[in-house]
Image (cartoon, rainbow, N blue to C red):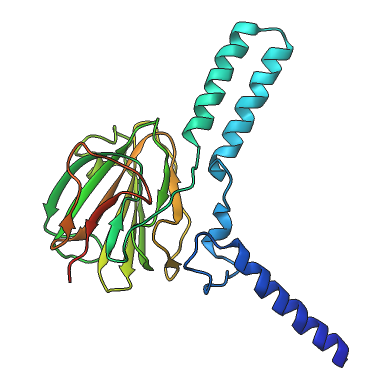
Amino acid sequence: MKLAGAGSKEQEAGKRFFSRFTLPASGIKEHLLSARDFRKKQAHVPFAMEGIPYILAAMFVTLITAVLGWAIVALLLLAVTLLIGHFFRDPERVSAAAESDIVSPADGRVLAVKSVRSVRFTDKPAVKISIFMSVLDVHVNRIPIQGTIKGIHYRKGRFMAANLVQASRENEQNWLWIKSDSGADIVITQVAGLIARRIVCWPEIGDRVVQAERFGMIRFGSRVDVYVPENSEILVFQGNHVYAGETVLCRLNP
């Protein structure tokens, strides 16, 4: 019985040790994965995991048409397959941002930077930075600052073009509230677009998150709105192109 107990303890210690190696990015090695840790859903491959079924389906149909000798159709489907693969690409990113910096949660073009009187969860004045992701941009979303997930709110809605002003109010969307380690409230809104019909968000309330790590995606063209404290030093302007996990949108002030 003693030997069995010792073996069980060694197995458990081994599991805890090897679980460390599934963590993304340096800086969070101290956080062991729980049974429902959202990082298990996004182990890195060159493509977003949610896109694999679409890519495989497109490849299969392309192969069938090629075998049947339908050359023109096969070439068209090959082009579609390549476009789908391009859309779901998930490149690695290297962040050199400081702890007080807010990095972009999305690739795309800055649509607007404006002040708002209140934000969901906090009811505090903030600066809203809106980023439009075209179908050519990487659609994997990343955490803007290290902290803890304090709130999540999903709301059904319409599917208007994501670059329209009213899209932030009326489209389907998912809100994510992060309380940074310094105490600042950062709120992110994933907004569905005209083509986008699926918002993916892996973390849950209470999860610890690290700056620039992946947390979800929006399929096929969309936008992300970021709400930062009103006294933040804004570093981007309308029309700028930003990159998720790398471009610094603003810097928090004490």
